[in-house]
Image (cartoon, rainbow, N blue to C red; front, top):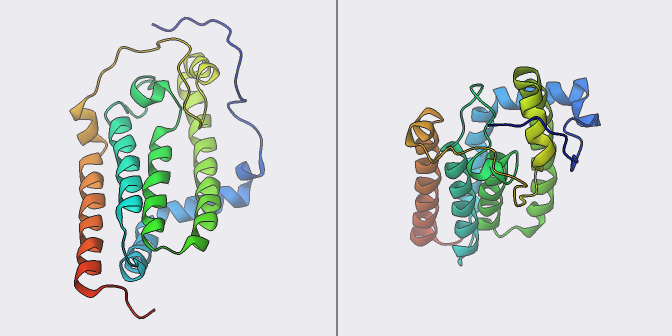
Length: 206
């Protein structure tokens, strides 16, 4: 049960930044709507540009990130309650943290190191813009309950929770409801296909 006590806030839950401005929000919304159309060329480029071995650093990082997403999805109950169990007890946005590591692992598979910095910057802009909107929605939906959670839990950097908010456990029903089984399967199949391409054809001329 949540006790509405005053806590020292580690960070402002809703800072006013340029990422909350109209043009940025419009671009983010457009990118979200076109995410599948944008994913197709991205996957094709990854498949073509995945370079020579070793694969294991990129694969390990991608699977680590997918593990975080799977763990988070097992606790996520969208718009039903403030999720404060599992990885949500350590950070407010574990799904985005997991997604970051999945993408970073895939970038490393190309062995084009110059892509790492643009990826990190681009993902931060995307995730921060998304989170600002989501947090505003959750504050309007859950009020002080969500504000108390924000006061005790960092937005990005995982940290030991100050107190136990929830007794919720891993739920496979939540995993299925959040469609995370198909996402995990897609990541694993994609990595296997890249491994097959590298084994069958080796580094391509470009």
